[in-house]
Structure formats: C-alpha cells, structure tokens
Image (cartoon, rainbow, N blue to C red; front, side, top):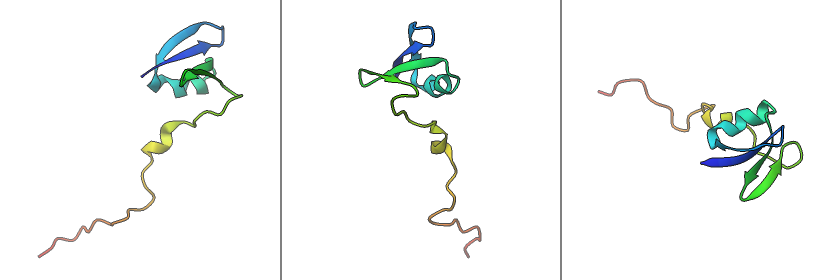
Length: 70
C-alpha cells in the first residue's frame, strides 16, 4: 500500500506502508495521510511499531507433546 507523506522540509512524497514506522522513528517525516486526512506526528495519535506482531507467544495454549506414541 502506498502512503503519502510530508517530509521535515515540507516536500510531499509517497512511500510503501512497510517504510512508515522507520521514517516516523527516524524523525524523517512530520505528517502522513491516513484515510485521506493528514496525521501530524507528535500531535495526532499514531500506531506503535508493529514489532509486537512478530512476538513469540509467552505460552502455548496446547503444549506440544514431544513423547512418541506407541
């Protein structure tokens, strides 16, 4: 998905969705468009980094039995 962004120097550009978190954390952009409206970094609420989606679950609901069945 392509997202429109405004860089710190005021220039407008388009980036891939996968680049958004890195640009936000590096302070390279001051705004991006979401649902057709501009979101200002540091003013409007934004999502947190998506690293939590890659987290390994703390415990399995159904533990895997490593013993062989006879």
